[in-house]
Length: 202
Image 1 (tube, helix red, strand yellow):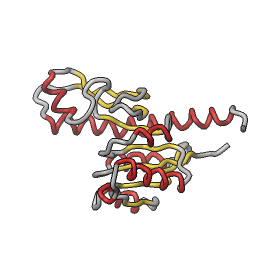
Image 2: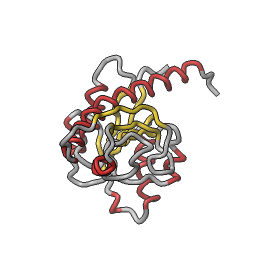
Image 3: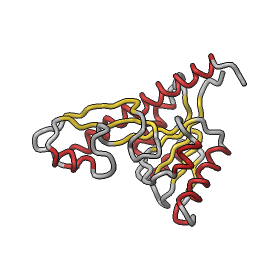
Image 4: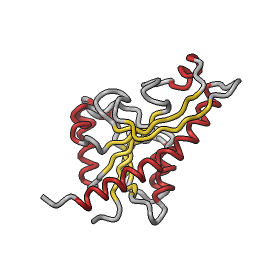
């Protein structure tokens, strides 16, 4: 049985969730390693974060591809070449094509800044404040073809405080994300390793 699963992370921006995952993977008993980071935006800090941690990292600029399917095929080829087991979206601001999602079904995780199924899509903190909710938060879910519709793996609640604005609420939700994502990935990977241990080879 493999001791650790290989994770490929996809990122587009500052890489704060990527950094949280990298830090978690440094623990000797963590069941994953970040084996590859793919970034689609030139100059994104996530690329430097990965390289500074000694992780193989590549820029695959989506603007250099004729279609979304072609770009996703490039991602797929890089992930397969690195023998990736699990894909983690860490601030990846691109919708994945149905073909990619089908090829990696049940193995792509995402963290979304709301308590799904509420506030799918963008501008979640502004929309939460406008709706007057008392509890906001974040969700780790499996990625499916529908936007933010995949099976929920875990959620973390964050209280909305009087006087909160988008920035203050977003900062507290981000702190929750940095705890929830590594914890959920650990549990997900342990479950996959346990399943592999009892599944006879074909």
